[in-house]
Amino acid sequence: MDTNEPHFSEASEKTASSAQNRWTSFSLLTILLLLTIVALGISHVRMSWDLDENNKAMATMEAELNKLRKETGYIDIQDESLVHVVTAPTHEDLIWRWKVFIPDGVTMRSMMRAKYLTGGSITSGSRLESGENQIELAIYRGPKGHWKQKITIVNGPSKSSSSGTLPEEYMSWFNNATTSTSGLTRTDGTKTFQPDEDIKLLTMTARPNKKRDPESGSSTGKQPDESTEITAWMTLVEKP
Image: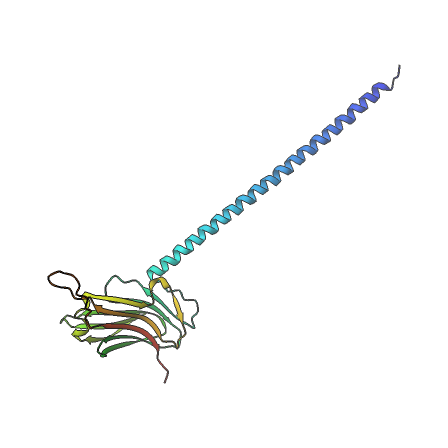
């Protein structure tokens, strides 16, 4: 009988058991490592997705903010060496407003002119000092029934205005007129200009509607030979 055989068998079993333990330990470490990698991958994908969603949300918010700024007439000053102009909202006919930034050391004038077809015109103007200003232009009937044009300038706590009386023939038919308008609009947002530029704010041309036949109520096809043009602009005041 070979007395070494049991010892060999026992040694083989120990070797096999040790190898199995090492394999089991290696397998667990591998699984843990794989799980860690998968978790990191999922986390990265989730972070990337969240970042993309956040970027989309931020872009949407910025677009809404820009839209709101335009609708409310917010003046966005980016370069204080330039003139900034934005159209502000109004809720009345024949009233217009703009917010304006004038660079330091620059003086401008806000001008308004009503010109009739015959060539006659009435012009009013007010000074714009450095800093933020609000321009309001208005055409209205005064207490005595006369048509007037008026410029009002607000600069911080100070307020100034100038006005002129418009001849009746300029405006008597205005409530029954067709108008066309050009110039700066609220959708433009804040626009910038060099201080020495003439800046057109508004041009509105009004013409009476075609006359109607009193019996049929239809248009006679003849356009009355009348028109009034309202123009508003800003211009530099030259230093003496």
